[in-house]
Length: 245
Ligand SMILES: [Zn+2]
Image (cartoon, protein in one colour):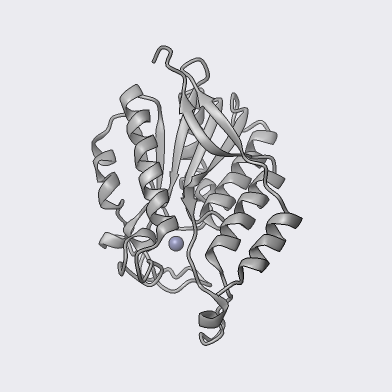
C-alpha cells in the first residue's frame, strides 16, 4: 500500500487545482464516456476488472451514469468508447481483456440503456487511445466526424482509467484540436469524480513478474495532473444552468 505520506508529497509537489463548470445549452457540449465496460468496472469480470468492490470505480460509474442521464434528457450528444479486442489480437502490456462478444466488452449494467438512446454514439475500440480507435479503414475518424456533425465546442470526458485510456484520448483530442482537426472544439474538460483507475499496490505488483506498481489514488492524481499539463481543464464539480435545452 502506498503510504498516505507519499500521496501527500505528490499532491503537494504536483498540485491539480480543480475548477467547477456550469454547462448550458448556449455552448454545445458533448459527453465522452471512456470504457465504462464490465471488463474494467465490474467485480470479478476479467483480468483487468476489480477483484473486490472499489469505491473509486463505483463513484465513477455512479457519476458517469448521472451525467449520461442528464445529457440524454437534454438530447445532448454522447459518445461512448467500449474497449473490445479480437481474441487473436493481444494488447501488450496488458493481459487478455474485453474480448469482443463477451460481457467484458459491454457497458456496465447501469449504462446499458445507452444502447437504445438516439443521441448516443457507441464506438468499439481495439486500442488504448480512443482517438486512434476511431479511425476507420478509409482513414475517416468517427470521433472527429461526431464533433463536427454536432458542432461541439466543449468535450466533457469521464471514465476509466484516468491515467491510461482517459488520458491518452484527452491528449490526442487536445493535439487534434490544436492542429485544427476538431473545429469548433474549444475546451476539453476532465471531470475528476467521474474518472477512476485500477489499483495494483506495490506489495502486490512486486510478486507479479513484469508488473508495474500502480497505486490507485496516486495514479488517478497523476492522470489528472498530466491531462491538465497538456491543456485540459480538470473539474471536480459539474452543474447545469437552468436555462433552455
Ligand atoms: Zn484494451
